[in-house]
Length: 314
Image 1 (cartoon, rainbow, N blue to C red):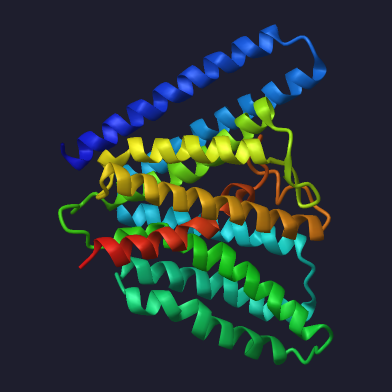
Image 2 (cartoon, rainbow, N blue to C red):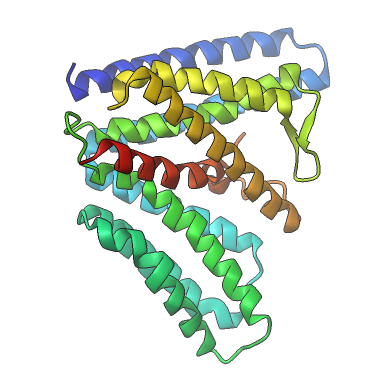
């Protein structure tokens, strides 16, 4: 099966699932008799509609090729960093460092992917970026809470730029017998982590009783976590045919993605709570902001990338 055929079948499967979900959502909404039930169903329907948009955008990027995919994720990082910094108080002394993050670090980090420069891609932000940022900030001669301010900016850059950039960086990998199909691997990782989020939400609403971390994320339950993780792992195993993995390897990689995605969502929920916010933004109806969709991805993507590179490339 050619990469094009795999892509067509994958899009057909996703489209079928979304059509079924949309129909079921409409039926459930008509049959719901309580305000609480309608609120839950409205939320699910909003998530399905957002999924239609997101899948469409990613499909277009896939068709247009590597450059379009890199640009797309650079825009995602830009929006995610903006949301992060909107909730994180900054001072005039930080403006130079913020300008450097938006207009230098993002273009260079994603440009390195376009140039296939793996070595510099992996160290550019955590070494050169993190050394340069405080040097730029200190020139503003504002020492008030300097360490706290620098740490917030660097943490935001790490999560929203460095970690997320590992998704399009999958296009760099030279996997034997998988030439020209790396974009499918990107789709695989995204689908597993996002479906895990959705399935955890569904299982949590249906069966959830025991809270995982009630103070940090009141909606997350043990039942939702276990049900969603098992279902998403099985889904990942079933999608082995679009990856260089065997079914068992695909299940293992999916389990890692699900685990890291859950931890990422939990950690960034704690960050939101510490800042007194429920969502990172309101850009995506039913999903919050861009960072609300990328929180799980930001933790899962680097681990998935390096496991794939270590075990499946020469």
